Length: 273
Image (cartoon, helix red, strand yellow):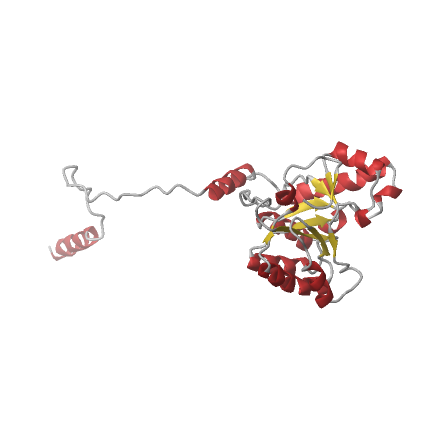
C-alpha cells in the first residue's frame, strides 16, 4: 500500500512539468498589432534592385551612384575640378576632403592604377558611390598621338573594361595623356563613344610641388572652367582645402565635367563650358 502511494505521488509530480493544454477556440483574441508600411526612398529602391541583381555576382558588390543632380550652370558659377593619373596613395585622403565639403569632382583614371590592388579598386567604387565622375585616361599614360589606331583603341578599351568590372560604370569621357591629340585620336574616341576633355586652367601641380602655389593658381578659376590637378601628389591634396575655401568665398558650385557641359559629342574636344 505504501509503495502504491509513493508511485502515485511520483506520477503527479511528473505531470506538473507537462505543457498547458491548448486554449479553447472560444478564448477572446488579444489586441491586434498594427504594422505601418514605410515606402523606401528612391535611393533605397535603387540599392535594393542592385543587390537583387548582384545576388549571384562572385566579386565585390558594385556601388550605387546617387541620383543625378539638376544644376543650371548657365545661372550658377560652376567649376569642374578634375584629377588625373590615379587612383593612388593620396586618393583616399582627397575623397575624405571632398566628402566633408560636399564637393563633387571628375577623376580621369589610368587603367593600370585602377587594377593595381584592392585598395585602388575600392577608391574607384567609392568615387561612384559619392557622386564623382570617372573618365578614361588610358591604360598606361602614353602619348596617344604616337600610337597606331589599334594601339590607341587598346589603351582605351582596357581601361573601359577594368572600370566596368570594378565599378559597373561605362565612361563617356576621356582625357588624352599630356593633352596630346589629333585626327587619329579623334576618330578612335568617336568610335569608342568618348568625348575628349582637355582643360582651361592648368595648375602645374605636377611640376611645382608646392601646396600654396597650386592653391593660388586653382583659385583663379573662372565660371565654366575645367581645372587640371593630379591626385597622386601629396602637395596637391594639401592644396585642396585651400582651393575649396577660396572658391567658396567666391560663390562657386563644384560640378562634374558632365554636369558642367551637359550632353557631349564623342570625339569632340572640350576645354570649358
